[in-house]
Image 1 (tube, each protein chain N blue to C red):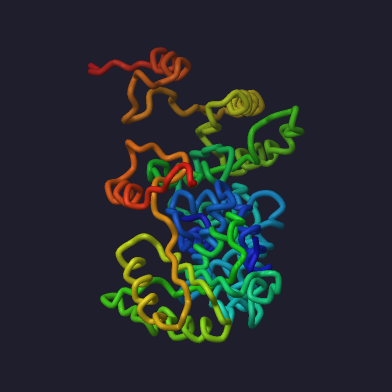
Image 2: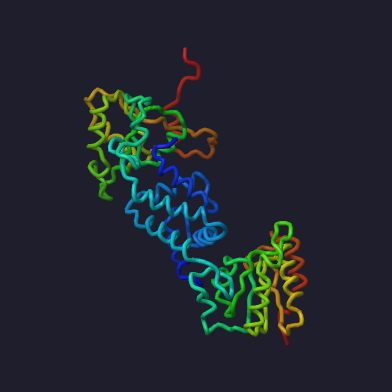
Length: 201
Length: 201
């Protein structure tokens, strides 16, 4: 089927988006062509602009169009707290919770030697430099609670031992609004071992 | 939250896609920025190209980058059969079924006087011209089975009465793989009134 090679090309190129199969890509392509097309032009321009200008912030290695990102430049943030995450998406999620006012360091994923991701590939030398130059007091290792994420957190803790920095890990337990019956065994055992007194005297 | 105005703009402009909310737009933006970015550049270029060059085919009024679309130019298709649909998406769905080898005419939606869509707005005069110039023998009115779609089909049938053209409507009934218990009342009554003998002698 084809009534226009350009429409086919548009549908095909939309499939590079995550979670977009052929049916959604087709729906998106036809919706972009409908109506005023101003949104489509804006989308095309902003993708081209982002591809051209966005690289990694030299300090925290998140996406940024300037040499240093807005978060690192912000003098109101607490430079003694550094949160280490695996990806810019994790950074965004933490920022959206409005609960953390320190700085970040974004690894390029987690350690996975079989996939060729060693300490150098994910940016651990840059992390060590950053910790030393900032004079950080606490590092929050917010890598994901997966095997690779845990291994990465332990590796970083080993590397930074002896630098007089407190290293912490985010609490694991039952998510808010979660139901005990649906929580997996690993999470439940973490929740038990991390239990807290209800009334602290 | 914001670490880069360009990333924010990219997320915001992705929201013009159908079915994309803020969380999906964020996921898409970060996925476009990851890795080689070749897919992102291709997407940007194909959207710009489509917006610039795609207009309506002068014969069937579907999307096309040339004056006449590939379907209308195809001499192997049966020009005595004309299928009238409401949108290019409907045309694509029919083409993908590989069951129809005639030509198409794409209306700009269905008749809806309250929304300012009269016969002129949806292109019925062009349809009449097309029917006369092609020498069509059968018109399949494949507008949607909604109130507006039915009204549009009946209006077209009225306008073209007396031109010696057979006018047909797609069969309505239980969809393949559907379960009787979940079929709505209207579909079920259509299925009863349109029932067929199992063994035709």
